[in-house]
Image (cartoon, rainbow, N blue to C red; front, side):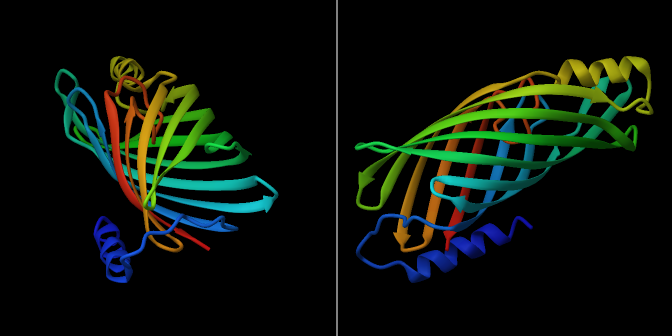
Length: 225
């Protein structure tokens, strides 16, 4: 899956023109991102995919999926594992237009599930969340846009009852539980109509919504229709 993003970027570059354009308003958009979540010793690398569809003026429905794998780490003494995490989200966005840019408010429901392999193979945890979001997008000219965003995750973290031992389940909660508040900055560039490339840096875990992360870096492409 990680080979998909470079191919899309090459395709977009091949169509690039000398003139830059502003991203058009769209009824449907598809987004693909390659992301890395920096943590203490268990960084996550993965891909995320998003769909947004206009349902009426300034209101969109959103769907998202992310798949990531952590580095191997010692959860407790004698238990070295690797975590595979998957996340599904559904939500809505509402745009407020101003003279200088666009404000977007969002509400979503998401669920991240984790499985481990290594010292213990099996279900590890489920994290159900409501996510409140707000962003401000300001055009910079020449096809560039800057976006400042914030997300608040409201979490219900639940270690799986069958996972390893009681101490290991407690260690899972200590490592991954939390309700992050993430602030991000995105630089987006539209080289041709209907294609936008973006780079985002965010504090904490802005993708999986797991606690105690340092930051998230993502790079991706969006197609507008």
